[in-house]
Image (cartoon, rainbow, N blue to C red; front, side):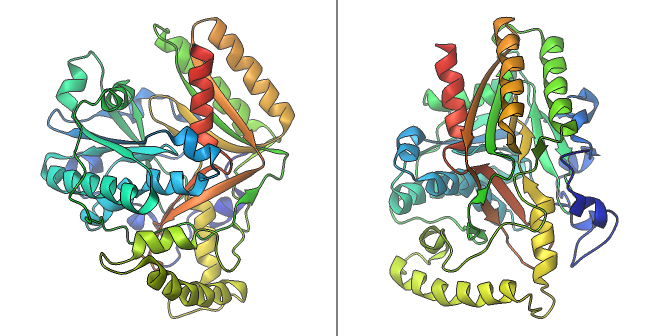
Length: 407
């Protein structure tokens, strides 16, 4: 498989620090634990992998309001930080218990069991307040009952895709997630922001790595969704065709190189990390000063490969590559690829044909770099996650292109 990195192939079946399948986001909810794990991305559309959410679950959805303006102002990292924040806040509220989530660049979606509704509501409310006060953005947040989604004749089904032995990411099908996002944007099921000064626990959320330059010419952000009234079988075949084309092409590669992303000092996301990790009453400048020294220490550890206790920098970087979340399905295909302009042209031509046939709607965005937003609750565990987006607009710009083409 072209997009399975050689680094991952070399370590298949080998264990590192606190990992292997036992550390692969081990689910604690009985339903999520029952969802089988699949490892071949080309089998993404196999309905046998998906299980419907129980009727008493909810779906959490978030979206950065007017992310287009923020991207126009070159605030790419800030938008991604806001998009990933709700995932980090809910994960920390659950104290390590696993849950299904998907990162969408300027927002996120996740499934909430009945026992975790309180934690989800508090995490969403506090995150919305933090995004407004610390990032100067507005984050829409909502909790949508699965029963309300099914009243529309739609569903939310979950699968678990494991890109490595360390992590498994949730995939969503059934059309319910897109309906929930649209309902949120209409103002339905809204969770009000918490009181001024409220802060979520964003421990582990950071973005210290440099932007990742394209090695094949283009970093492509791609979003493909079903066209209204599309034949589900036709759309499934289209996605399978697109995935197979990308997986087998020598002109496409994962956006994160096998040696891992570059780390320089001071890191580009230092101010964002300071805002995410500071205590409620701690000034940003004070937290930033602390991080300056901490990140300098980390830089030397990685620069010279110094083992500190059980932490081995080379192993961590290897896991960063393996765990990178650069392809997903959330009622549509999303991918960030390092590929040639020729392959982008081929993909766009095939998708344009599908759009004319009424099978799909799509958007693409070409850029020179990819960027990474990391959630690492513990450097001693292997299940840290790394969200990949385009470095100059990414998913949000591809989604805007999709909307523009539909009008």
